[in-house]
Image 1 (cartoon, helix red, strand yellow):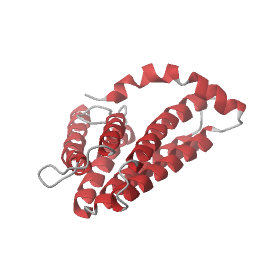
Image 2: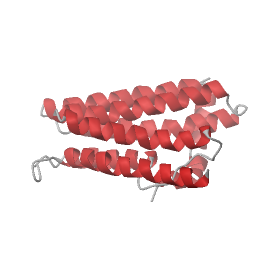
Image 3: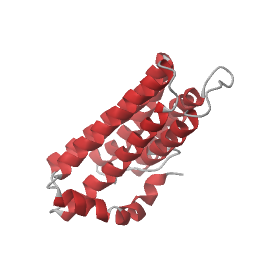
Image 4: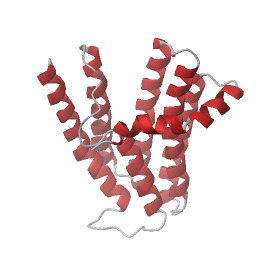
Length: 203
């Protein structure tokens, strides 16, 4: 179950955004940086919303996360449209994606001041992505399988961000955001182990 498999279908829909980026003179690297910048905005919004008792700010965070995901597709399509990109650009994209993941999840945890839970969630997210790319490093295709990929995580954050703007009552001691962190902490590590298993068997 991973929305990453739907990426080819989404890529065709970003063509207007790619054309706009080209008209504005944006390079794929610039779009990657822009994607990271909106992720930082999302993480900051997730900190502010509960700490300042401004739940509607969660909507800003959800919008920023949606833009991060959109720009992440646009930068790849723009690279292909302008000559296929470069190894340096691919490295920058992957590094900024990982930092974006960290900033978003850390923002969710910091807003609730649930740092241990946030640590477990962040490590689950990072290890999921690491195992996906490490397969390439040992000569396999990149692994996108497992329970939750990056596209799934972003979709869950967007949905939870929207819900949290209107539902603030805790359930069993945790808000909706808290339960999302539990999900990332558990399912993230399960997904990482699944990817390790798939890659190890293929070697």
